[in-house]
Each structure stands twice: as structure tokens, then as C-alpha cells.
Figure (tube, rainbow, N blue to C red):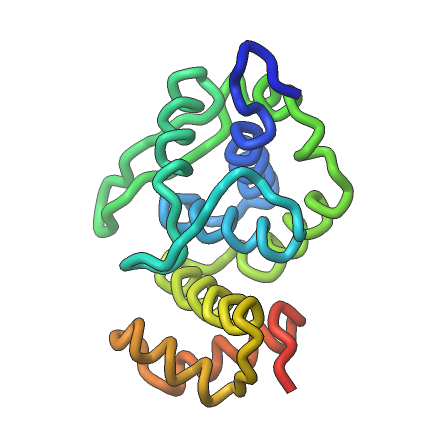
Length: 189
């Protein structure tokens, strides 16, 4: 559905993710975690949600997500509040227009999208932005190697991620890799 020329399928993703995170009582959802959840959702659902991610400083990133987030905030679809205290960042919460925006598209009502979003929240909803950065980067490297039909192993993926993200030690990357494999986000032999 494309009312008033706006891309409602894409715009409906953010309020749906924000609403679902809030309903599950997950920790504050910030911009980095939002990016990673949308990237993973698009990847695991197999549904194009309107974003074209590339690997960036903090993992998969699409500037369109931030532009859409600002637009949705202006439409009163979400509220963005600075976090005061020891952490920097923001907390994104549902607002009075959340449901109106979500309901302008059938994409967020798709059963596969809903199931995969539920699974992502269950598996990763309690993680912080740094932990999501690592998992989404692992998933990105895994998918990229599959897309290029490269034969990859755990060692090759972990090694490449360690090159990309040197601030993570090998054991942390291996542990996150094993978690993704155990939860069937990656399927290397």
C-alpha cells in the first residue's frame, strides 16, 4: 500500500519493532540496536523491508533507517528521548501514532515477518548495542559469503569478523558465532 506516495511498507517497520520491543519489556531500544534488529529481521524473514544495508563502523547500517526514524518521530509514531546518566544514546518508545503508521502496511502483518520478529526479540531482546553489533556483523559476513558462493568455515568467518571488529577478542566472537549457529541463524557445517 502506498498512500500519499509514502513508502508505508518501509515506514511501518520501525514502529512495529519499537512496539514489540516495548511490549516485551526489553531494555531501552536505541538507534544502533534498532538498525541491527531491522537488518536481522530483513535477513531472516527473507522479506525485503525497504532497506539496503552495508557494513559500517558499528555493523550493518543504512542511513535510510535514521531518516525514517526522524520522519516517524515527526509523525508522532515514536518518541526519542536522550538517556540521562552513565550511558549515552537515546531510548525509542511507542507514541500516539505508532499503531496508525504500523497499520498503513500489510507487510508488518505478514506471518513470517511477525514470527521472525518474535524470535529475534526472544533471542536478542536483552542484549546491548555492542552485543547486537557483533551478532549482526557475524550474520552479515555469513550472508555475504553465502551470496558469493564462498566455502566458509567457522574459523574463516570468525577471523574476518575479528579483522573488521578488532575490539572484540576471538573468544567473544567465537561465542557469539556459536550462539547464532545454535539458534539457527547461521548454518555452516
